[in-house]
Length: 132
Image 1 (spheres, rainbow, N blue to C red):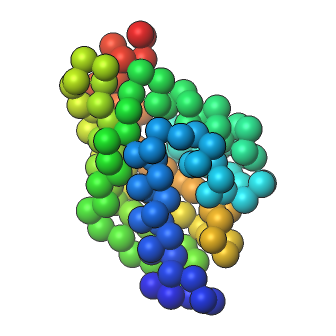
Image 2 (image 1 turned 90 degrees about the vertical axis):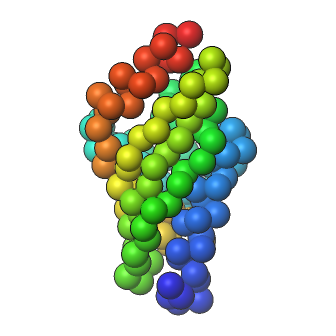
């Protein structure tokens, strides 16, 4: 939906596709300098350096295949997605994680991003990949 000259749903789709590049810097570039990224099962992170650390941690031993958006709704500069985040392990196996994400945009940058998912579900599928 267009709001103040920005199509926040389109920006959200582009951001989700950026994960498929396996490029932490490209992902982090979408955030404001003081952005907050909060994976609800863990503590919130603020700023590019902290966000980059989380991106690297979540993708260690995994390659993002797709952030499959099932539903998207927006109001103003806030966009909510229901997704299945799909990762590939080195052995070719897949990790599929249901996620609800809320993006708060400032212009073409993400100011706040909250993700709701079951950390145990992720860990049980990805444990062998993360362990190396």
